[in-house]
Each structure stands twice: as C-alpha cells, then as structure tokens.
Length: 172
Image (cartoon, rainbow, N blue to C red; front, side):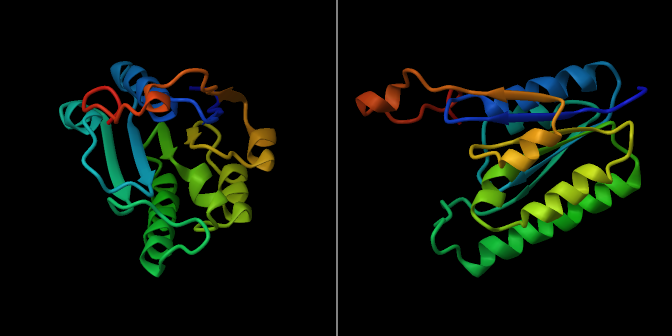
C-alpha cells in the first residue's frame, strides 16, 4: 500500500463496529494484517467467534461487561482505556499491521477516558501506510477533520423503540 487512510464510523445508528469489522475482513482476505482493539467492551460478542477463525485478523478488548457511567466513570474504566491506548501505541510502533481498528475510541474520548489530544497525536504520527479506523458515537469534530473517510450512521427506525431487546447474532 502506498498510503494508509483514516476512517471514522460514527453516529447514533447501528452498524459502526460491524462496518469496521467488514472492512477488516476485506483487508484480511487480501492478505493484510489487521488488529481490532475494542475500548469499553469486555463482553463476548458473537462476531468474535468468527474473527477467532480468521487468518490475519486479531483483536483485544479493554473494557468491562458493564456500561460506563459518563458522568462518573470508575477508576477501572479509565485504567482499562488507558492500558488499551498504550497497547495501540505499541501495536502501531511494531509495524506488524496494515490496519488497526480502534473500536469505540470515539466514546472513550467523549467519556474522558482518553484525551482527545492523545488521539490526535496518534493519528498525526501514524505510519504513512497504516490504515486506521476509529468507531463510536460522538466523534469529536477534531477527529472528523483529520479523517479521509467519515460515515455517520443515522438511526431512523430501530426495534428497541418498540421495546424489543437486543438479539444474539443480530445485535450482539
């Protein structure tokens, strides 16, 4: 690859992580090495079962199975996000990956678990050929301005509006 680009998947609609994983699967299928680091997630989501069987696609989770309180995050949530961010920097420096997905990093920034300036520095200093994908609601306008691709998922209709709970295999 000549140049790696910055992708942002944001918005209140469904499909941000799914889109990033789809892009990663496409890259892995082309023989590229992909790592997805999930912030604020510690639950065993169904898509991870498939990723376990893919060559060239690895992942790690840096969060708990509980929701984080935006107004008062617990120390463990901050520590896990910071540890994940340290790992991202190591992964990038290793030059082993063609694509790194930072799943839910936009939310981690919005919840003040990770400083926006640290993320902007990471983006600015990324290796030229690295493709970087940032997902999550509430993408900071500064991140959006650095991106080459920005997709906003817009929620129009969702079953939870009718009280329907998340369904395994479709929503998690």
